[in-house]
Every structure is written in C-alpha cells, then in structure tokens.
Length: 493
Image (cartoon, rainbow, N blue to C red; front, side, top):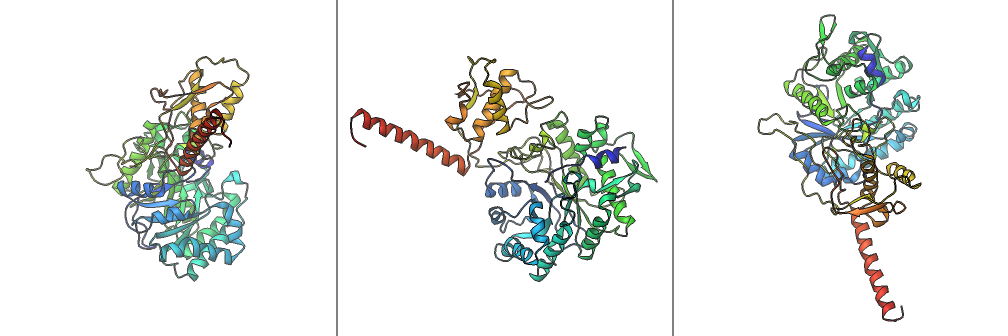
C-alpha cells in the first residue's frame, strides 16, 4: 500500500523551496521561493555568502533549524522571510518554564525583529518530535513548549506578526488503505495531535509537515518508481472520484482527510521539507533529483494544488546545500539533499523563478578554496598491511565516505581508489594539515587531482578554522627554520 509505505518510512531527521501565497488566515505573506538552510557542515559557507545566494536565486523565504545570531544578522534587511527553529533538546526547558520561553523569544525573535530588521514570520517549535524512532521522548513537552512560546510572543506584542508551528514528520498520520480518504492520525499520538491541531487553529497558525517521496522508494524495493514523481503514474489511485498519480498528492491529502475528520478541514498546511538527495543510495542521484525538484517546481508555478486542496501550495524544498556533518543513521543520503554542493555550486539545472529568463541556479560567488592538493594511498603501499583497514575505518568515521558504495557517485572505484577517497576526505576535513595525511606511512600528498568521471575528490573551502590552521602551520615552519638556524650558528636560544 503506497500510503502506508510512505508513512512508515518518512524522513527521520530534520530539515525547502517555498511555494507560497499563504492562506489568508495567516499574516501577510508574499509569494516566492524558499529553502531550508541547514548548518551541519564542517566547512560552512559564510552567512553573508548564503544570503547573497538566496537573493541571486530569487529565494524569498528561508527555514532555519535554530536561531543562530550570525545567520539572523546576515538576513537583516534582506527582504527574506524567516522561520526560526527551536531544537528538540530545548523543548523540556521551554515546556517547564514560561520565563525560559520569554527569554528565548526576547533574544531570538524580538531583538532581531525590532532592532535587526529581520522579517521573522514563524517559530518552529521542535523538529519532527513525534518520530516513532524517538519512542515518545518529546510527546509530553512539545505542546507545553508550543504554548509557552505562543504566550511569550503574545506578551512581546508579536503574536499577530509571528506564528508558531511544529514541523512534523509524515509518520504522524497514516491510511489503513491506499486511499487518502482513510487517513487519520497515528493511534498512539492521536490525542496529543488533536490538542496541537486545536491549538494551532485557535491561534491562526499553520500545520507544518515534512513529506519525502524519496523515502518511499528507499524503504520499499517494490515501490513503483514513477509514483514518486510528477509525470503521471499510469496505475493511478481513484479515491471516490479523486485521482492520485503521485505519492506527494496522496500523502498530503491523507493529512487533509485526517484534519477534516476532526473538524479542522480548513487549517493551513505548510510543507516544511520536500526534496530529493543526489548521492549515498542507488536512488539518490542527479537525474532523479532534477526530475523530482523540477517537477515539484512546475507544480508550484501552476498553482494547481492537490485534489483535496486546490490552489497554490506553501512548501519548502529541502535543502539549500549539502551538510557533511549530519548523522547518517537514517542513511548515507542524509548528507546529500542540497540543491547546491557544500561550496555553493549548483548540482543540476532547476528553475526556481517564474521567468523564462532564468533557467538554472546561480552559484555562490567569492568562495575561497584550500590549496589544490589531495591525500592518496601511496602507490608503493602494501594492500595487506595490517594498518590499512583500521586507517580507512578511522578516516571514514571521522570524515565523509557516503559517496562510496553501491549506486553512488564513487561506487565504481577500485580498492586503491576507495582507500584514497577515504584518506582525502579526512585530509580535507582537517584543513589539509600535514598530520592528517599520515595513516601509518600509507598515504602521501599529491598535486594531481585523482577525480574521475562522476567521482570528485573534493577540496574543502576556506573557513576561519582553516585559515587559522594554515597560519599555525606557517608559523610552525618559520619557527622550525629559526631554531634550525640558531643551532647551525651555535647561538643560544
């Protein structure tokens, strides 16, 4: 059953292109495109660089997973609408203290709205807190935290301008059949979901849900591939006269039916995350990602909506850039959801703007990279060396080897290539420090790019930490030379 397949395997972690015209029950929102901006990267682009990327690509809305002051500062007077996030690990304190909620709102909303000129429209309280994998950890704290943040916004005089919401995974609802009309909330959280829905409705706030057709394909080998996209699956589902030829529509309308059954059929819905990864799994590739995201954007441009909710969709595509420091517990694809690579360069053409003059993505400008050098396995290295396997394991555990494996961009490398990729990933993550290319004498630094075909041996970008390490390395070299000179000259030091 397609609906059940999606509900049980919906995305596990966080994290959007906004298709807008928000429901008139919400505060004045403008039509435009938005994205999720995640920051779990070892070498992140500077906030100012990302804001320029957003503006260059006509992106008018952004969803954040926390309230990083440097990011909010960069968004000052940018004209970009913002959803700030509260991580799950803060829910307990906010649920148990009105003062904590007031302090959070004062520091992370009021200060930026009144003094910083940041156009904050939403506060996302938690991120997918009711995932079945959390075993109920946040069930008792999400609604109280939501209420306290709402009270704090009201006290600050911002409740008409800034709305609260809870980004939820699509596994909070399900269908007992393949039909959306049989949808309802998950039995184990039905009561708390209805309490949250009523609270959102009473405060003119939207229901936010993350929908991932990719996960349906990833979780179920028998899932029909075409049903995950927007090209019109031939074996469509007929639900009392409503036709469903793609899983997004079916999933979305399963939620609509769940809301409608409990008297909240007009509650605004935001799709908080939707997208397709490009690596880390055989179904995570450039071709599928482009097909999915462009298909979704065409739906946005048409303003078609879904069979149960006609009209423009309000949604955020996940995500803006790849994040090499995300957990891979759900799958290696987790680090590859970006429309852009970690350095802000586009992965594939996709049109985010309703204009024939724009046919692709505009990459980040002014990005500085580390030196053109790579760490690879020595040609003379013995593949039977006892230190080789633990060295590769160490490199992958402390860097990013998610592009290795069956069906991935570097899945066709030979043994030496796999080892070199692992070594180089660790070397780059550690800012090309000489000590990061030792591996018991099995590795060497080269200025010859080992990339080939779809497999790229990436060079990291310059960050403050990278520049510091580079300066330290330079000073170390100068100091070593100075000490050596003193010794040679037999001078005291």
